[in-house]
Amino acid sequence: MKNQRSRELSRSVLVIGVLVVAGACSKRASQSQTTSANSARAAATDKAGKPSAEGDSFPAGIDLGKLDEFKRKVFDQVVNREPSLCGKGHSLLYSVKHDSSCRASFYAVRYVARLADSGFSDSEISEKLSQRFRVPRVPYIDVSQAPRKGSPSGRVAIVEFADYECSHCKEAQTLMPSLLAKYPNDVTLYFKHFPITSPNSLNAAVGAAAAQIQGKFWQFSEKVWENSDHLTPAVLESIAKEIGLDFPRWYGDVGSDEVRGHAQRDKAEARALEIHRTPAIFINGRRYPYELDLPGLEDWIDEELGR
Image 1 (cartoon, rainbow, N blue to C red):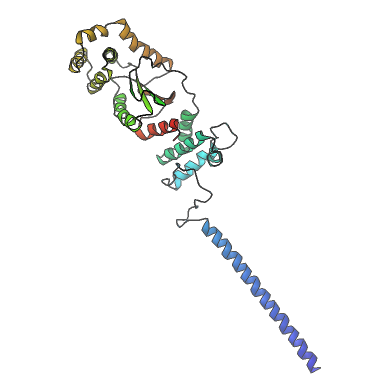
Image 2 (tube, rainbow, N blue to C red):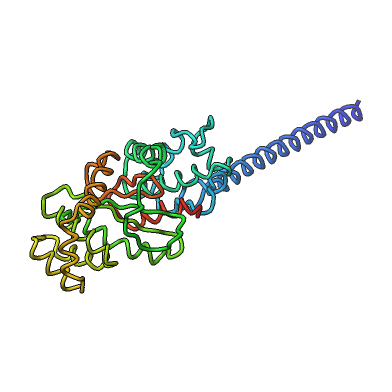
């Protein structure tokens, strides 16, 4: 009897021991699972508490590092809502990450990031996207008589319609030399007249067209910009003399139907293109619809060059 009770006590101790061990294993397994889950969450979060780059990577050339939390939210809203620019049934976000053949979406997403960083709202960015990427190119602009600068065979043609009394046009002239210097083999700049402010601006356009006949359009034009606040006939005549034009010839050309027709044809073409203000810039037939700045112009040129 004593031995039987001893054996039963031993079995009870054994069972309790097994249960204790099992409970300990279960606890360790639970702790292990919790630790693994915490590690996974930690791996998905950076030190600042933001999502890590894993699963959030974009192609090289699209930098979101400067976007704060609010601007990143604006960026995310736009790229998730706007459709692919290649006519496919997915978003810009999916397109840029998974459809490398759709290069247009890459440029669009890069553009969205720049606009978001500049503080534009999601609706403003969508409007600018539409203006840039969904408006058809102008099929033809006549540059056969337009003076030009830059590469004679550039892959990017910039056509500028300008008025010599327009202050924004004057500001634009300070940007063009920088563009031509940065893209010496890739950009050709054409100048077209759109005199809409006063008879003085028309006279300046005609004077520049007459100077072009003698191969001195750009020299004449530069002096006109310097004097754009007072473009009287006397000032235009003094410019012609200052830059060394054959003055009698220039004066005669100014009054000719051929030269005046040059300025008027440019103006008529601008009207046909529905240009209502100056400067009007076209980059490979695409209307640049914003205030002019070097980063914006360079971004458009890089897109045309596939950079």
